[in-house]
Length: 581
Ligand code: ATP
Ligand code: MG
Image 1 (cartoon, protein in one colour):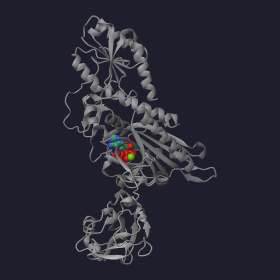
Image 2: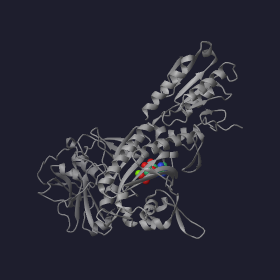
Image 3: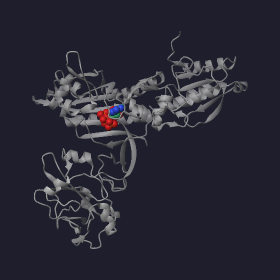
Image 4: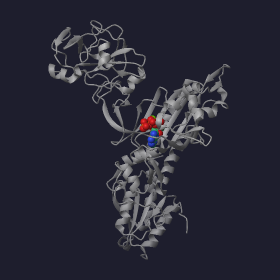
């Protein structure tokens, strides 16, 4: 049996079992369509095989990522998936990574992990052999399977337990050098998004398990995205979990007493909602107080705008192990539940407030006395704040922290993230080089992750319709589908074959649907799989020496003179290709 000619795909030979029905356990369009269009098949929860068509897409995405890494001087290599536990002990992450890290023992009872990321391995790889500042900077990357035992593997390729990542790691002698490569990587990520055909935004982010402080996430905008984003036309954009909330004073309504410190009798009013209703005021014009303590037992009262919530990730960064006080603990600390305020707090309690509250002329908040609140509490005059810290979860409409206009919100899929790691891993793993002044210094490191398989799902979330996938030209499994109607016809079949051959000779990736199937079946599969250009060769058209060209993205159909068809299509494909260079 002939093998598939990789230049000219034949539907009659291709292993592409498309599905008519939506698979039952697939919720998102990308998941359903990647299964239905015979791109992937499920092996286990969060584990997928790539069928020939899906594999072609995967290879193309990888190639674009590779070209953009090579272009900025990152060097491709390949590192093992299996990692010895010792390396993870060295960095300290064996204990903190948690159950997401897939661990196993070999026959000698040595511990190992399947790589969820590669900081440990690469640091151990270079530490003995990258010795001098003269050899720096170095940036190394690989495109490799990753393993994370996600608590909820779902949505097909979006959150897998086995997935392909491009991960790059860079080593520098100076912060300036790291910044330079970080900027190059960020620019490369932007180009990757553009070349894949993604609508995207770079956003400020949290560094999570990886560590470091400066980090950017690259978000593909999609309703199905698991991440919330706040953004503004001025260019500001941040992940919801770290976005800073500014105060929008327009909606602030001072209490009728204005700036005078006034005690208000508010019997039984212990929540912001009740307080706002009781005083006929909006929640935003009140100040919410919460009491908690850090892991060392220090107690705090935190103040945020009344209509907002505390942001867990932000608190955790400034007060590791922070928990809210229980009723019992409140009592012990002599704090009055439901009526907390900044005036007259017991000794030793520290006050942290969100900087957005600096905008308020005065605060309407608890009086630290049962059944009382205060209005007109004025910062500096009536109370002080020990620490100002961003601890509030932003809301749509909050003032942009950069320009003050109302923030907008969107959903996104994180397709990539870049980090400045600093010396986190080089210190814990003792990786040093000889600097220009003759002293041993720790490498300053960066790391740069791109979700290769996730970005395929993100692409489909942005490019589909009722009929199926609409592949951008840069990653489509083939560029042009030639679809002969009436197989066996003495004119149709050879014409279609020769068109396919001529297009192939022009360097176009062609698939021919040479199956003995009805027109409807061929059309449906062509749209489901998502071939960007479909050239339909039918008996009736040929009588007048024409063929029909269908553009998948627009559904537009045009009749082409047979003589002109190849030339026209080559021009169209080349024009499309240029959009993604
Ligand atoms: P998430 O917050 O979505 O769990 P992450 O921030 O933990 O992702 P990173 O450690 O930054 O992920 O990994 C780099 C990239 O790898 C991510 O930007 C994402 O594109 C991809 N990725 C991470 N986890 C998964 C997964 N479970 N399935 C598919 N791709 C993933
Ligand atoms: Mg990330």
